[in-house]
Length: 276
Length: 280
Image (cartoon, rainbow over all chains, first blue to last red; front, top):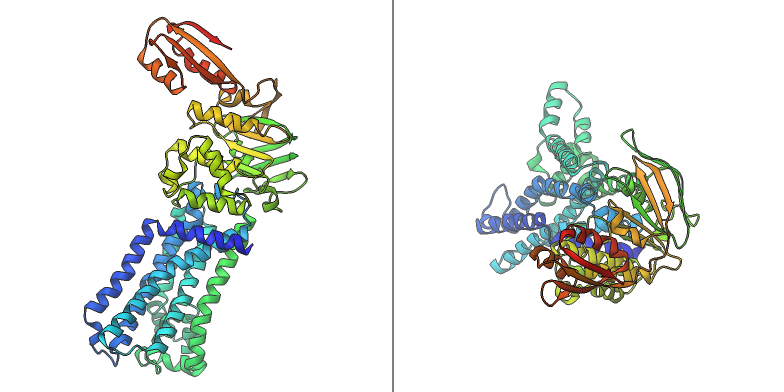
């Protein structure tokens, strides 16, 4: 089982690395980091952030905006697209267990999706070392951990959507809608609802912390801004309830668990229904 | 060996398979024919465990949905439409051999016998191969492993006459105890290969005939052909069949036994040009 899973992961990696979407995806993340570095952001000081911390903070915020939609749009084509193209018909006629195929595919896709995001951060570290800036290693590892978790979260969600959707067009529409809802629930709707309905702040913050994008955003802020000054009054609720360390653990675990749960539900549905 | 018991399958309330009952014993070489939408592919997918269906599908008593690996380890499958895989040919063979517990060299050997230059295409993406090359490679993967059930959807459709001859040879090496299920729109494509014809129409079995089993798939017949005059289009077709000539009028060549019907079908288009035709 494990051997087949690894073979499937390798196959997915090799297949994806040749896809056009991957080229665009890798170029976007590479270009974002290069732009941040050459634009002199590392040398600037804004709201107390300077050096590599400043660059990483900006990069992580950009990741939060574009990484989920990139992952969702490319991932949802995975099962639904393979089904349409007849890839599933052939590959699942080989003696591969469904578990090894499904999780192997997810693992292979995870590596290919995470690699450009991670390499961009590594590029920033190398740049900082060459330019003589201090490398904030603790923040670097925390940020990487949060990116690991966010990537897995949206891959799992994408796999679930891809499994449910009958066609890749439907899957893409659903993925975009999910992303939009999560994005809107970052601030706009919640703030509006809070003001209008006079809801208790704990409830509003509690709801927002069910949104993996919001959890990632808050945790990534917390890495560089221990008091969460950037966030305003909501910070009090968060820090009173969980504390900095507690929230960082939550920020890493919750998206990872969310993604795993989505992928697991997707697997159960995939195994129970028509494969092709 | 293979049993379909009251198998039905519906898509959005439309019955694609309707109460199918079939039994295929070892040695059965079945032509599964029918028009588009007759249910051929759906039946194959039920056998491969890819569809949930009503009724029972069993391979030696085992349900393909329950023990996928056990059943699929016994089935060599060639799809009608090759999957658009971007991975290099070498990696596809390596992956298939690994999951089928076979030797990649064995699969490559079959593909080479069918006329593929493996060294030239090993690093090429599978999707970039021509239709015929893809078909040969998929046949190589299906036959280059231990399996006692062969399921093939239009297996020889994209093959040239020479490759078809070799393909028939390969099948004839597996006649004992192997169940072959070959799907096709056209019975003449596979008629001489099979000993049973099952026709589906709108999800029902409308014909289930056992046919004379006298043609050895590996048999080859010598053909001598004399034309009334030389003709360019026919000369091109005959050259594709591997025929040679001295003057454009007298031709000699060989035709694989199971390909006779197909060959004569091609010749019938030029009936007015035939002075004499001898098949031995």
